[in-house]
Length: 222
Picture (cartoon, rainbow, N blue to C red):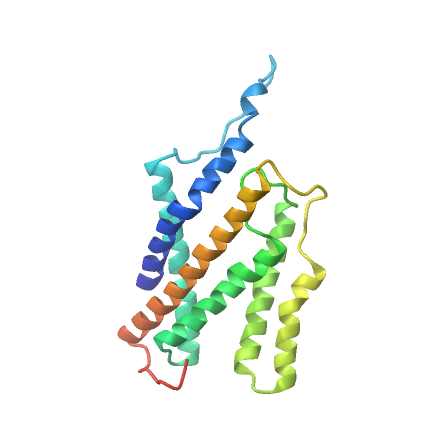
């Protein structure tokens, strides 16, 4: 929890610098024409869902969310360390990179990070594909890393490719309201900040796992 919270705090700070400004810019495209459409007489007023106010309130909830996500993933990595029995800080980096591949890189190959106003397929379809891709990628990496037999490693590689052979769900009309340059920059910034987060998460959780009673470090074991 400590390692995940710290890594999540750093992620929240990086997002405020590199990611959030792009989201705010995209929201100007999304809401740019909303003032032009006015409700006609007799229409029922729509109740807008709650959202934090821009500024300190929005920053607080964004950083808090990043810390909670970090704690969850930190506990997940700690469970992996417990299953393996021991871990070094270098091994923590590898575990962190594996987490990045499972939860960010592989799903993003089919469903890139989206900005407000981007066209997208149905939410349930995307959620199902995302969950299946993450699960299959995790299984494939586990087989490749820990199964000694070559044919099993080939099976692991096949699992990595399988979700992308079927393909992610996409809308009939691609694109969105924001410029392509902003969309590309957002995807790059999102992936880089998450990569740094996962590396730090792996290091912090590995060191703290050993400090708080994990197995003693074995230089030959990751």
